[in-house]
Structures are given as structure tokens and as C-alpha cells.
Amino acid sequence: MIYFKLAAAALTGYLLGCFNSSLLVGKAYSDDIRKHGSGNAGTTNALRTLGKKAAVLVLLGDALKGILAYLAGYII
Image 1 (cartoon, rainbow, N blue to C red):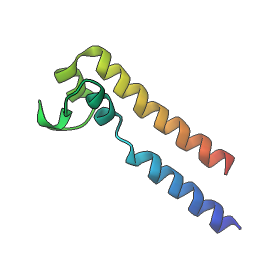
Image 2 (tube, rainbow, N blue to C red):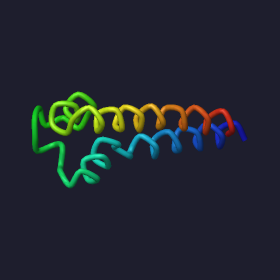
Image 3 (cartoon, rainbow, N blue to C red):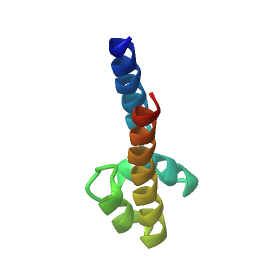
């Protein structure tokens, strides 16, 4: 039973990590963030290319992923 819980927690964390909040915010701004600035899909490049509001949204999205991964592991 413990192995099932560990596998479920690992799979949940992996799936949450697959969502890239900077790409989602970039789509909301009708832009692909990877084609501008450093080419990195991260908060710093979002700040450089899309502005402060977009960077805050990316940062919050990444933080939310971490919180959700923690809560999923705790619940499982």
C-alpha cells in the first residue's frame, strides 16, 4: 500500500510540474515567451518581455504548483 501512495504522490508531482505557467500567461498575452528575451520560459523572462503583471502571474502560478504538489502528497 505504501508503494502505491508513493507512486501516486510522485505521479501527481510530475503532472503538476508539466504545466508551465509562463507559457499559459504568454498565451493569455497572445505571445510565446520562448521566442523573446533569453528564450527561457520563466518569471525573469516574463518580466523582461511581458511586464510586471505577467511576471507576478507567472510567479504565483509556479508557487501554486508547489503548494498543490505539497497538498497532494499530504492528502495521499
